[in-house]
Image 1 (tube, rainbow, N blue to C red):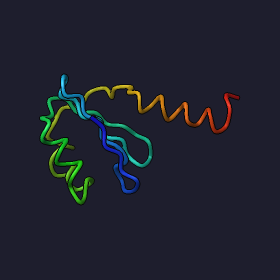
Image 2 (image 1 turned 90 degrees about the vertical axis):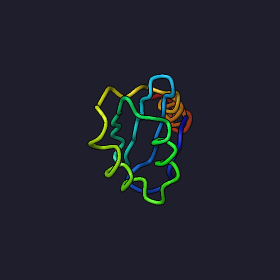
Image 3 (image 1 turned 135 degrees about the vertical axis):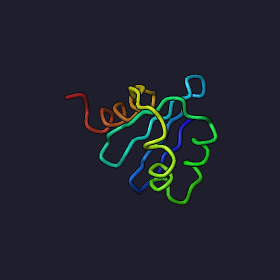
Image 4 (image 1 turned 45 degrees about the vertical axis):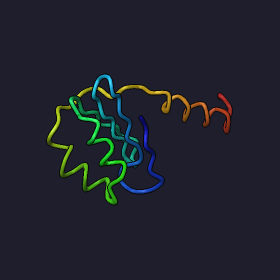
Length: 88
């Protein structure tokens, strides 16, 4: 599951239901990943009026860090840039 934000500190959240992993991408392109996150947390951050505040209050220090997953969204962004600027 994936949610993109057009503006703000958090730009993308991606959730792997099977592994209960939440990846959070920030405006500076850094991605942090958290394990053991229940699905309702993903739903809440997607619908919260302030995803940054929700992340700070409910995720940042509450769940263990893990390695971010490389998702299709990462490669599709790269492909979009290649299509726009060429492969050189």
